[in-house]
Amino acid sequence: MTAISAPRASAGTTRFERTLLSTAAGLDHFVSVRLERRAATPRPYSAQGIASDARTDALSTGSIGMLPR
Image 1 (cartoon, rainbow, N blue to C red):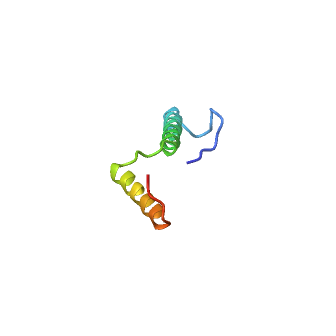
Image 2: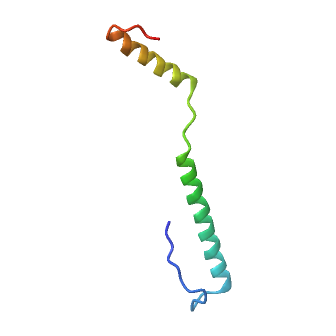
Image 3: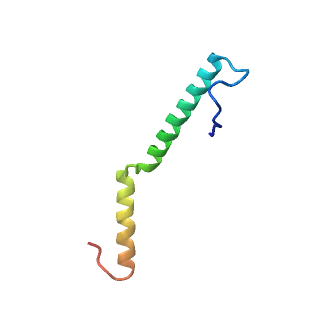
């Protein structure tokens, strides 16, 4: 979400509306920071995924005649 800054004393807005807008801007900032932080953290690996990757690696090395470790 994006917001356009406006002077503090806008014509036609009440103090309550300005409070709601500033609260919405604060919540928007909080959510965007949380989403950025969540996207930056790697997902945990599952045991099944690790076993599958190990099996795939062993099959690929076996197909070219090398013994897997």
